[in-house]
Image (cartoon, rainbow, N blue to C red):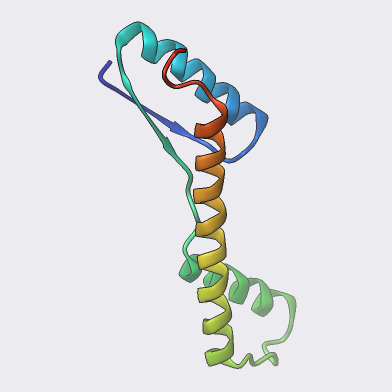
Length: 98
């Protein structure tokens, strides 16, 4: 096993998965890669709009420009949080085996 890809979301289960991957990685001298997925703003926007249309008679009209700017800020924040999560997990765990 040359590479081990481990998805993390900050849950105890994902941290346990990283620890197990480290054990396996030591045995097989593998490279461990952590990944955290951030849902795209386009997907979130589509889901939000579908929920709005399903909840009302279609009379809600949002300011699209303002909404798009907010979505960009949210995506940036989600990405920043995911990067911080990966950094924190990597810092807490002993990847070097020392």
